[in-house]
Length: 458
Image (cartoon, rainbow, N blue to C red; front, side, top):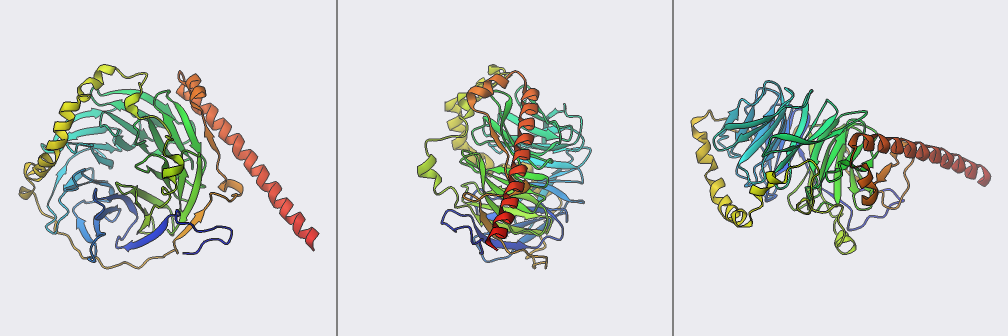
């Protein structure tokens, strides 16, 4: 791995581990098995590839959708996989050679997002038909719909405790929903460009969004205001992922780079390159030790994190934001959370979860559905390859638009914005534009100083 001469490689830098090729079109989603033994990828080539990380065997290809697959995820048990497609269906898979699967006729348009609930019993889907739907997996039964968006819904995700949902749409809104009541309890309005991806912070008390306008935003659910803003990329940001411990974030962009953001320090600390084209998907392993990236170049790269090593001693007592269980959400009826706050029943559910999930395959009655045997093992497909590179930006200055405009609202100031989230967003974006202008001006001055110094040396 080659690093710039101005940078020093340390044991805390991310490292490139493995390179996977096999898809015939752009990668759309990635997900690690809960035990980090496999990695599944989906693609516009209508297939899933399951890569074995602990064995020498090649990946196996599964095909059943009639159109490009837009999202894929493992169930918390790791026993089944869910995939969402442009063909308007959601399919539940057993990742074995026989390729058993069933499908949900889920929506009236392309399904862009799919996710299992934390307990593995429910499935969440989001679609271009402007709706979000909740399903009971074992019975393949529709439970409820969330339908306040007025344009395509790009993404919908569960909160860590499974009581809330967050979604983003091309209508330039991000909405937070209470599952028990089915109501939208908070709306964040994007002023310029819509969010392409959104998910909860591991604490459950904040949400992060990847924006088409080349920025990343974090919103505080307590105050309903913008908490952090990063202008870290030069192209649309396609996806973000929080590190499981909550202090770091990965971002993937059409500018062909991955950024690692230190959320406690409020700045990017690494830029990763390795894809020939836009990066469309990223994901962390469950323990956060590894992450993977996929792109329009049809390739999947696997990396070792490392960057949280020096975080233990230095920042062990720090948190970006307090856990949601210690907070109150302004617009949420506390009664809606009562049923979930029962430690005794939660403990029994945890003990029974393994047994319940082991019965899922039988309850789904997969053997009665049409089988789709895998086509593997997969031969590698040649493609343009870029040498993976890790750029440490902790101690160097960037120039021009590569500079970061990071604005952090302290908690005492954030409370003053609590009554108007839209006003907060406008103020923050105006501040970020001003900061970016100042960065650009400083960059020009630095360049002129460099030219002057070179001229004087001559």
